[in-house]
Length: 506
View 1 (cartoon, one colour):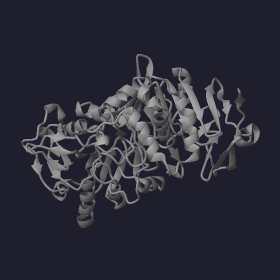
View 2 (cartoon, helix red, strand yellow):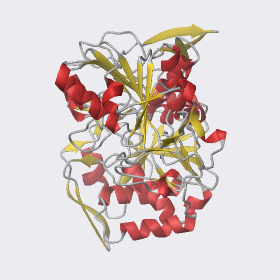
View 3 (spheres, rainbow, N blue to C red):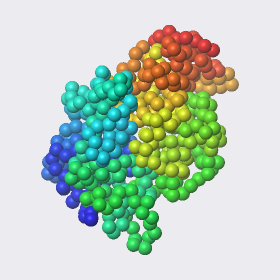
View 4 (cartoon, rainbow, N blue to C red):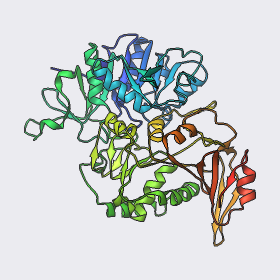
């Protein structure tokens, strides 16, 4: 039976050199109180040190001063294995300055590796990442000179080249849940995602490690509960910390039942909700224009992934236009249907119809279950290759980008033509570029390979690149310009801004 302790008492059991595995997804399902207690213990004692942090998504918190990354900033961390660095800017800076051993792997591959570790396996075999930065022929997952561990290898099975990913070996698990019963069985009824909570607990327990779970409350004995509500059985839990101060989403107060699915809103009501939220709100004009064009690619019955940034606006447009009720929007964290939430609670959905584990969601994605996806881009080159995760001055991390784009039938990249100060104006004659952004998105060659045009051709994928002023599609020889927005000067605003020649098909 688990012991009920304080966060400080729980983290006092963590030894130097431990691998701590987190069930975080950015700002949701985020064990803040455990992270805060770990930070305080290290400040007071200098232990535990030489830690490894392993998280298949990202260590949460979009705001500066993220409590989850503080332990690394204090000097207690030797290495990190993450898919996403957008919510850990200080860790990203330490990596780019070669001060921290670090590895960037695809979210889906990490999630599946955790599940494999729970089953006692040493590795998984996957096509995810073939011919991309994570492929051993590039070794781009090793993020600096300190990072020399081999975590991905090439393997040939039945004449087919595939990738072999090492599984994690966790010593400690940090998990946030909603409630427990007196025996220590764990439920997640108020959470917006499950992540890989059970697999993480199983993988850690089988190694004799510590499974530490923080919950908001203990259930009353008279409170009805079905056994299928239990996410983690008590037998897998070492310590439980009751933390009534925990919130559903880091940085936001309270618990919203619409995000957990305990309250439901009709698709029509979601459309009204978006309109109300947008009324008077400052919206990015470029993202709004991109979304208005991109949403036209949605068809009834589509199973869809919506990414962060400009794609978030596509979800809103789907609600505004009424097609939301005819499609199945998903988020890689697990929600199915409803309206993906943007901003701080990204990873949640408003009024989800179902919530899968992350591994289950990536089973769908890797199996080609997505009809279409909408996703951002840092760089696009003449061949149609895309960098979505890395720049020498900015480490975003790959997240679920590869799983989402490598296997989806139709990929729609949503990005402004340039970034950093882009100014637009719309009038009765159409769209006008008042000032170009400082950072071009279209380059001669991408800095890192997150999406391969060669892979897309081999997989028979349809690929679009939607900007606020024009649309390209992927042709046999690279980008083909197919649309230009009214008011845009083809030569001045598009062709002269490209660092390469492009085929025009208007």
